[in-house]
Image 1: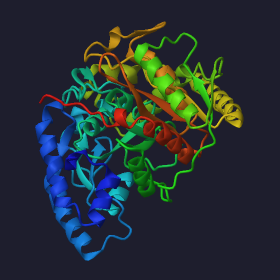
Image 2 (image 1 turned 45 degrees about the vertical axis):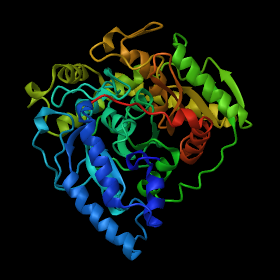
Image 3 (image 1 turned 60 degrees about the vertical axis):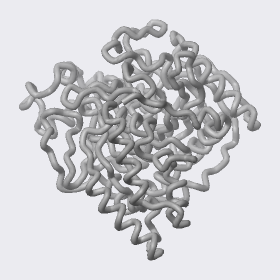
Image 4 (image 1 turned 120 degrees about the vertical axis):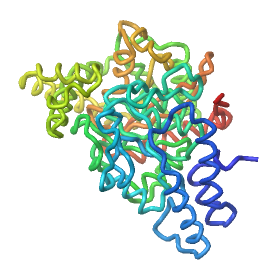
Length: 457
């Protein structure tokens, strides 16, 4: 029998409507799971008492049939600690905000609450979301549910790990360079980076304003759809079945996929081909050199954000050395460099535009390597790339810099027992197509998608 904490958001919703499940009992099951797996450090701050009050109110609403317009009524949700939450501590992953309690919700959080979601807590992240690992000097490292010695990925690592540990069925993350997709791949869950600007970033601490995305994370594609129906509006459960012209990109020319990454890409390609897709490998795409312009843009915009908040350089001593060093580096970027990076960005976007005139979906890896052991990120090697950042961002940055929708989905388990995933991207505005394609890949291997870690507390 499936335990309550194992159920997805849509499964819970249907059980509540049929009066077969109780929001109070589900919330308590999730709370027990959070307590039993607390050593993985997925949450920075919990809000279980407030969630319990909401669960009791949801139970009364279902009993009275008063559920219209609230598709997430009684559903436990975790929120990345980069989003403002009214009355609930929000640290942005930084010690300088350890006692910060916002007065208002971020727009995405307000939409979740209005839909009846129960916010159970704020999840761990890299400081100010400026990193793809899951370490955090202020709050401790978030551990990978499949191997507690390894990184959960970042910067939305807490949200991804909470899902893989089955602490919640739905979570909220952000993605600037891969911060939804990377931890989703490392933890074996799903995550959708919508088209740039589709979801509001109001109330989210900015990393790089022209690159930041808000997106949902879940274990099941229909849960991403129900979350998007709340965050974006529309009937996301009726996702289109995409025309299956699938281009497969193995990554930059010097990329070196390991056994697990190759297996994940091959499994996704085979799944789409079995469902009638035309699946072909492409090479020599004009998207291989996205990392350099991305880095320039991110540095300049991050500096502007921290200066605009009155934090840098006034409170420079309160940053960790890694973030302080990046902000100092940003001060050396010249205006001409920033403008040139913008030109390169448009060139990359135009290249994607030409690609999607012939192809419906771009299938590619998320990471060429498995999640590294904590503290060993700098030792990662892949082709000519040295360090986790350079090894991974070449795969995730092109879609970000062009503002494309992209969805992460698990498609294999490596011989090391760690999950491996791929991403499916489409042209701007084709979010439903991307999610539908990811759902097709997800549904091709039910046995794989039913496997979750048995963590040792």
